[in-house]
Amino acid sequence: MRILFVTATRVGDAVLSSGVLRHLIEQNPGARVTVACGPAAAGLFAAVPGLERIIVLRKKKMSLHWLDFWLNTVGSLWDQVIDLRNSPITYLVPHKKGRHIGRGHMDGHRMIRNAAVLGLEDNPPAPVLWTTAAQDERAAQLLPEGGPIIALGPVSNWQPKTWAAENFVELVKRLTRTDGPLLNARIAVFGTTDERLQAAPLLENIPPCQRIDLMGMVSLLELYACLKRAQIFVGNDSGLMHMAAAAGIPTLGLFGPSREEHYAPWGDRCRAVRGGRGYDELFPADYDYKNSAHHQFMADLSVDQVEQEVVSLLGETRS
Image (cartoon, rainbow, N blue to C red; front, side, top):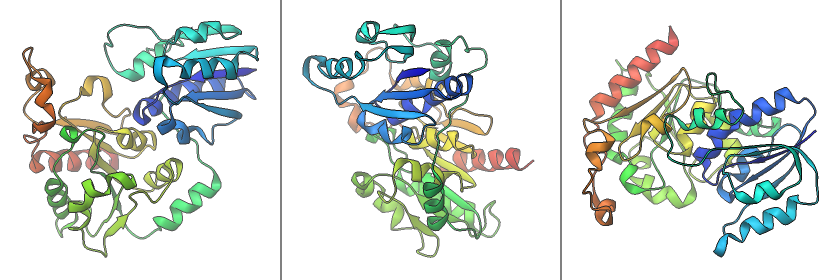
């Protein structure tokens, strides 16, 4: 059995597709798997069981990256082709069975839309990533036993989606103080090297004895292994948030200019929170998108509100 799995460019969307991949692997023991995805997401699939190779789709003018994809796949007969991007070129790849995600407007959560490709929309398989023993050991070295860990994702791929650094600082103080729910917890801060400047005001205000700076320090799967060792994740709507949810830890996603009904963290131990304004209020029909980069979409999400959600989420998961 050979499976060709075509998935997303962005990390978050790729994580949300991983449940479909897991279902395919479980239903086809011993299957050989090829994953096609964008460069940013490629590292997520490095430890997939039965992996033959990863085809990295680097965007080219005139969609010529799909020609590269075809040249890399046309020489094989695939038992199953699962295309979560619905590219016309995948219809031209030799295969026995093909399944393609539908086009058009996306209603409901992305997880449900992905699962519908396999007819599993009533019981979508939860996201999961696979790690190696070496990656788990690396996480244990970076986050050793010794008290609770709060994982923070203070960055995002678009500045208006980012909760202010000073809010994260105040949240950490409240959660770790004497009467807080995570007394003396260590604070692990995640992001890429390029996002360090964005996270600097937070890093500078966490006491060194508490701070675990992992910005740009780990691979994607090492990051995932680290997240599994945390007691809770709090962060902006991002790929990090979806990785935390897939890791099975309590996850609180902070939303503003994105739709939680489409992209809330998925799982029984997950929640999404936003300020007083809904998405449609932030983006009325006459909204001027040219100036959106300067708008404070997250300003009405208060520290009080996020703290309350964290305490409630921790209480539910502990019980």
